[in-house]
Length: 285
Image (cartoon, rainbow, N blue to C red; front, side):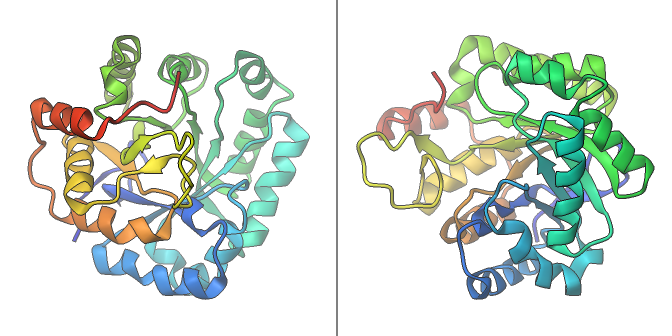
């Protein structure tokens, strides 16, 4: 079974790997139903989805009807204005056929102009706090991509007591000195304030570029088990950090298998050798 750890100050012990339900966005209901039992087999008890992940919320509904009490359930709204976010949050509950989600997240809040609107009196944050007050959600988080997101998350935490953050984290991206420094500062704040930390893009190999896309992920992923082991174990070697699984069902068993066998963090030399050998690159310029 995959180890569990406190998910920030929520009172929930979540599996160190969170199921990234983006993997359900473009699959049939049958494919979703066949894949989801893997979560129980490996002890995964936390699902992360989003309104923008295609049909993912709809695909989760039958599973949640049988297993809702076994999972910490998170979704996201990408809307920035109050009325649109309010509507989208309620639509997500309807699509999943649940009365409440555990975590609503302001999705991909990166651009300063969008940040200003979302955290204003007429923004998405107001819709999220109202949903929390009404019992539709329990906690509120914020997510994002790109090399500025760790710094932006720090700014968000100064404005509002978010319960969780989500951002890219891998050995390759941490080689960017400015981003690495921002992430370390963010991690320190999150530990001080007991904010849950979720990470993404752990098994990214780099942009697809001119290659033919052979996976559902928008980046080229690592596919060999030995390579996935190294990068997953490196992420899980950061105490208290959670890893969100990749957006392709074919990769899910390999990520879960790697996480279940985690014991110690591989050293930086091993990851540097992997990066050089496979020519790994960051997704973000």
